[in-house]
Amino acid sequence: MRKHISIILLIAVVDVSLSSVYAQSFKEYLVFVREKAIEAGISEAIINQELSQLKPDPRVLALDRKQPEFIQTTEDYLKARLSDKRINDGRNLRQIHNRDLLAVERTYQVDANYIVAFWGLETNFGRYQGKYSVIRSLATLGHDPRRNTFFTRELISALKILDEGHVQSGSFVGAWAGAMGQSQFMPSSFFGYAQDFDGDGKKDIWNSELDVFASIANYLRKNGWIYSYLWGKKVNVSNEVYDRFPPTPGKSGCRAMKHHSAPYPLTHWIDLGIDPGKLSKDKTYKLLRLSDTSDQTYLVGKNFETILQYNCANKYAVSVGLLADYLADI
Image 1 (cartoon, rainbow, N blue to C red):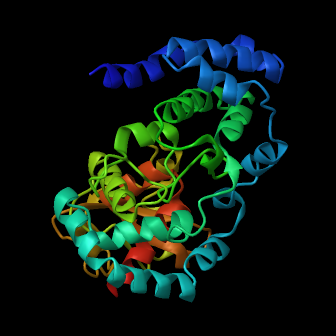
Image 2: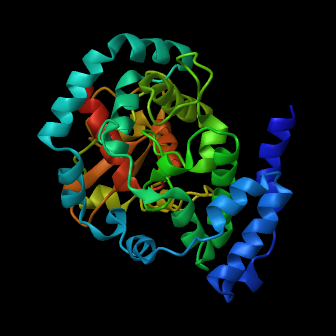
């Protein structure tokens, strides 16, 4: 019970104004982090070990300013992520891990092909989990004024992961923005969604495929996944029809949603001459265009919105859906 309370406090103790921290030096920022880590119950041994000699990583800030979701064309982005090799590897691994994936699918009610698609796109099926120090990356981004509250919270959670012994400091590496493990969870997502499915007493998203599959599935389930419901479909839509259903910014916190049209029943889109394929006729779908040309237009449903909870970028969500379709031979 105390552990659960301490995790909840991770959010509360850092929910303070950081405006005075923006202009401070990195060293002064770490003093601020140290105070918040102590308040969160993290041991001084871990705090000293991780923060005493820490310096910002300029590579992280450079990468933050040129994320592929925002600078690559849709065609280049999808081509890079949906290569023949990745699709074939995914199909092979889907069969190799079939028993485990079906067990996870039954338990969490999340389709196995989507689990493999996330695994493939996040870390190339566990082969590349990143090379950046998670602590250093999060501290660098936490000191940067643009999203410092978010990344400071993640830094506190990362210190908590080390303090609880989930991973050793020397192995605590990940992507440049602090995502870690084969599932590329942010530290707070580890506490919210990581699972011990192999029963060894550890939530090992770094080395246990079973734990990785279950953790991805748990994330999706808790964020509204609808079992056996397709994400969406690429469709042919004339500019005339598309212009009648412009993007309608909603209340979602995901900025990618502002590029979606209002939702309509599938029958509405069928009446406009759009081929529904295998989409569920009892569900609603939105219209999404990823580029200025009509050949990147999609109908997307509720599961697409759940994919966006994992990574709030429409190109990313489409790549997950398309890879899952390839694995299912849809």
